[in-house]
Image (cartoon, rainbow, N blue to C red; front, side):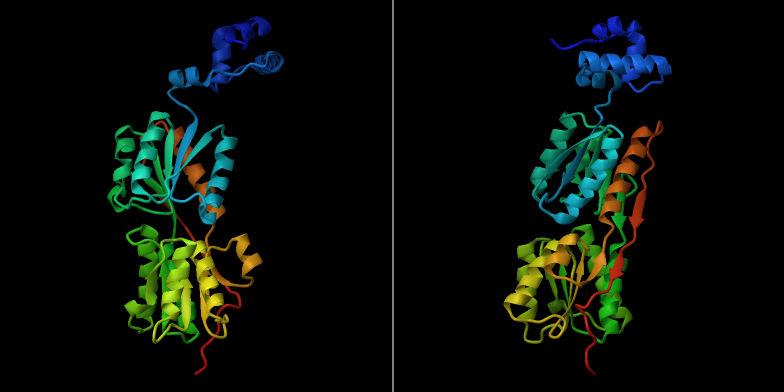
Length: 337
């Protein structure tokens, strides 16, 4: 039979009030703490988390909703986020909505029923409608990587400066003499897609280059999408001399498309990718890449959520914007004049 609080009280000689204070995170005398911890070990006592959550109105569980668990960038964020939350005694429930707005809404409802203390969401639905129930339930919400226009000044977020990152990459290609620059974006209407497109367009216009819609393709942030987008770009009658591919999975697909067509980088085509992940170095070494601080994003998300949950006052929405880094490799070259 499992040990109870009364068993602990008999073993330690302490009152139930002292034991309750200890298990709910309160301060107790050092000698009492040692007595309790020794008794817990001896009796194999496991706290009743359900009863505790009903009393404290906290489950110490954070819900995380993501579009694709198979996405390497996303899993690296979750890993660093969970490391921080676990050190603060929070568990994490991860829901993969497969980039389906209906599943995303169902995931929010599921996590509300599980009484999570907070929600962290890399949104699939750009309207934010899926979060309405959580907002009404006053559950703290933190957006990661993707802002939602309708929720600005209502929820906090951790993002990167996508517009600058994109502009910096395209400017690098422009400086090398490229004017026909192909762009492979993710799903339309998403914040990351729109801001990376804006950076691309701004860089071209600042250089006096008129953007050409033929060189813009959408690859839905998947390997297959990247493969198809690059196939279409290199198949144009007047193909681009350079490509900027805006995420890891699409970059993998795009590089395979180039290999299948016998296109040599950078002799035949210059390429800049996104996300400096370890997998790149083993498959396609020495690429020029926009590096996102994915581990930093995860840590910032965890720290910000912990800050929100520990505050006794209503949270003031904050947006933390992190910087990227353009790491130069040998996948780009200057055009011969």
